[in-house]
Length: 332
Image 1 (cartoon, rainbow, N blue to C red):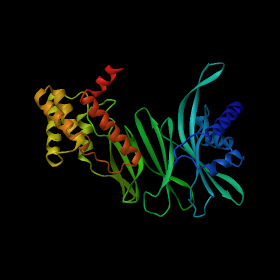
Image 2 (cartoon, rainbow, N blue to C red):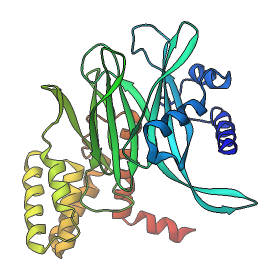
Image 3 (cartoon, helix red, strand yellow):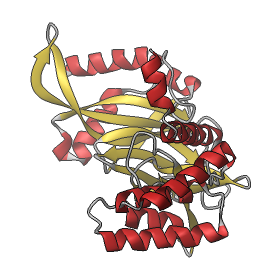
């Protein structure tokens, strides 16, 4: 176990010099580990004590940041944790083969000049995907959001600071695809679950729209989004032709109010192709090619990175629709 801890601490020292998303690490807080003020061994011991079933796992410090939970700057630190399980085999001169086995965080508070481990919490999901703080409720102080995943499930677990300065779980929001993330709307933070906006499952179909969760009556309530509901309903590969026809009618009705909507046009095209409606498919294909990138994408709640990603996949979809990818391949 000591060897694993030593290897883990070494891995973190290397990791701290690499690129990590901005929400995941605060270099000045990470320095607390380098200077021996925060100890992974204390975290591992606390996890094994609180979660006995985790004793076969070992843990890495994956991210670290200061958070102002108590109103005093730089006295609260959150450490993101990713767990690993030894699969019992080795490769390449004795290196262990491991698999993801958990996600969570540790919360430290500085009392005078001594850093105390106040709590550890594990969340659902085998893979750790980061954390960030944001005021999602309008209390004037951050809540903590821990991201994790398991298979296709993307999970955001929200914690709120109680009067006793203990982080209490508020809600677990689960999605697929890009999943739930903290986003902004009119300079306000909120949880948004980003889902596929096209009924076809393909490499060029990764265009995401967001369904926001609003804090109402002491809970997060998802806003209505009929479009994403229809995409989820009519993207089932097991649909029969009558269901596909119903889906086509739904998106055609949507188009009557949003004639330049790229995703609605693409969904009509894909459903026509699936139904074998050659003339109708050709008509929607022509409309898509004519509008090209002048067609509309719903980018509400998307940050610049996701907006750029959506536009890139929109262009890729159009290129494949026009056969440009095939032509480029043939020119090599």
